[in-house]
Image (tube, rainbow, N blue to C red):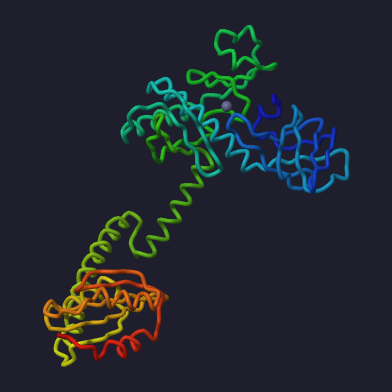
Length: 389
Ligand SMILES: [Zn+2]
């Protein structure tokens, strides 16, 4: 829709009359004599705002008619429209920035525009680059900011068909009214969106990241208010980390690296203590007079297996070790090489009766299932006195 109100991105209020109203389920769809609301098109999102103080829930186009969806009926014929400034400003700024960014890349870096996207926090352009690196990103960003400082006007024009018929494709010319956007020396294109009046309104453009796609590269960038909000958000994160680490923001990388080293050291230390503890527990079983031993622990599976292996490798024993793992449990049955009893066959019997899953071989079998507090007692009663060779 060509709407002259869109030529000034801060044309946000209007008193107008209802032309048509359709009631649909719980909503009222209003068409007005005129509107300042932007209806999603050209990659720019629909405006937010109110009509007579009532929040507009959606903006829809049906058969060329522009409807404003409201949750309740309007009482007056003359209505007051008010578009939300913050959202409109961000849309106009980031869209204008995409004109600058894409055109400078088209002209200076030999890459086509494949796609562009923005919401109210994030924006990217997808360009047909074959390669990309930090240096090129910096060059693009510097060039954009040079032009922002030149404060070139962003001019909206309504040329006659004859004036522009050689400049654009037939698809772009297939409109009753032609609307062009000109940023002198940078860009001249058909566009129906809202724009800021000149490049200085963008303040600054920053490219945060780039990402390879199947068609080229996405460049994640921000400008204007969205950029200021992102910087404020990053600043809050830095402030909070700075307080947590009790260092100034520029010392955070050093503090993180120190903490990572401390973590590595303490993990190694913990491993050593675990090993020492397992050895001392194993020692108790190795030195026990019993040949069939039972034990219940809260180790992880790896530690339980290790304990069982330590015991059966250093004494002539059959072990039944259980580990409680919250709602689950793990059972290990292991025997020394000098014994003949089949650990796996014992495990299979227990597994069948107690709904465990797992398996193993004649010397070592293991598996798990739901925690059963009575299992150790049951195993002691059933296997405590079996004959071993
Ligand atoms: Zn545009």
